[in-house]
Length: 389
Image: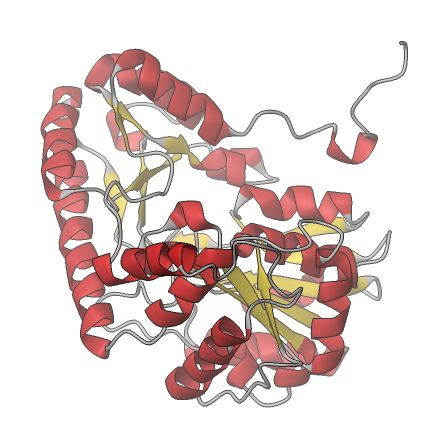
């Protein structure tokens, strides 16, 4: 055949960097701090809830299209109790196959071919692919390092909006930079969305993984935003069961209906027994979340301090479980070459941040490490990275 097999919308997307670097880790026996998944399971009582659901025959057949009622109610209760956001579990909550499907369904439902979608660069790699599948045009607005954190240039954001702009795709706490958008930043985004009549899709899967004095604020809670916002959540990051692939959206009835219209032709339904377990997980006491944050903050500090000692410039994250570093103090600005050589040099795998940028040159000297691993694994990684010095 002379015609390309892959359609032109996806032609720029090949094998993900995560697959490449995970294969490199396996081949070299390196510690994999590239892909963001924990190396231990989450709470035993949540795992047992899944086993109980399987044994009791709950979810072994197709669950309801919007998700099982127990989970939808638990999600609505979580949004009300944590953030004061009231959602009807029957008309304003939709369960998805992880946050990735929620992103895809939202963009497929809400974006017309030719619409512009603003995303904060660097961004999770599925954002670009989903915008492309929807026929939209992605418009990156770059977060830039400033005084130890990545910040949003609100003037640049406003300048990026055109008559063709359909929605703003947010992510806070932000992967890969670890920044948590401030109340002032989110208020400015909300005011712009209301002024220009834009939709907002906000990926908040790291909502419970915030450190120091950071506060997670859902943009849907700000004036004028509830009716124009699709909020995406996920169980994987909060409860360390990433393989279960249980995510969700909360939004107005009209937006939920739109997203469900696309979602039903993607997976239709998924994760039946796990939905019952996640419903129980969402009702864990506050002590669980406090313990999770304390554990991850200690691991952040262990890895961050070790990276600084090895010669990296470190941007200490206020959320997520990733730390971004600048490799220029180590004598290079090529993140791709650095990460491909790092397993042989130090027995550690990381991810070049440039893969999260349209403007690859802006991300070239930055490298991301994940700290959602056992303490002894992180300590061994830190010891290995000292070889770089």
